[in-house]
Image (cartoon, rainbow, N blue to C red; front, top):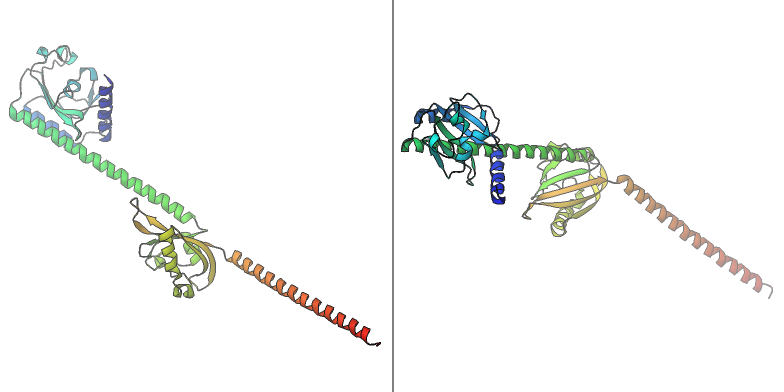
Length: 338
């Protein structure tokens, strides 16, 4: 085969693989097609045949008793090269088949007719075919019936392919959700809060439960500002943070917050917008980390610095007073003898 033929054959095999039909067990829907083809065409043999890579596989068959035969003697391998339909009235008089071992030897096949199984892209993947040991021809109704049956088989294969894709997508979605949940809930040192576009909580991780105290069921559906202090809510801090997230991509949050029991804690956090591929806003993601001890240490350090500054200032004042008094005593001592 030349390069174009090789490329087309590769596409054909990929299309066949997408149906995941090779080597599958018999199924009633396909068996019924083979039986109906045999009955309508009055032939002892009928097959729903798939042509793989140097092999042919019978998804359904009547009159053969096997699921696969050698590729080299396959009538269907040549049939899929035809545009739509191939009929061989007498194989002994057809140069393509007169040397075929199934013609020259057992079971001495003479007649073949097959309708091509084509993908929506026009790639041939197999046939619905009938065979006989005697030369013969099919009338128009029988030929049309084979074509209709081939269309039904392809419709069935397309349904399987779409169902397999949907199942794969659902599987991938479940796996992605499981990974998301594992990461989401494993970050117990952080409160991670997901909100919708209106700012209502839609998800609340284990870290948020541990840090803030509310269970997920208590938090979901509430406005995401409910753990801000009353004075910050009154000052509109949550709205300012959300606006900053929309304008610059993040809204910084470093302030006191409330736990369920009313206890205050200092946290450092950030609010980020969640956007779809087209850039449309889907919601918000907020991450908080408790830094109360750091804040208290900073406050303590500030108090110590202020206290030290106050003491140093007082010390300078005292020292200044002493010097002034000492100078006055000296001056008094000098004047007194006069």
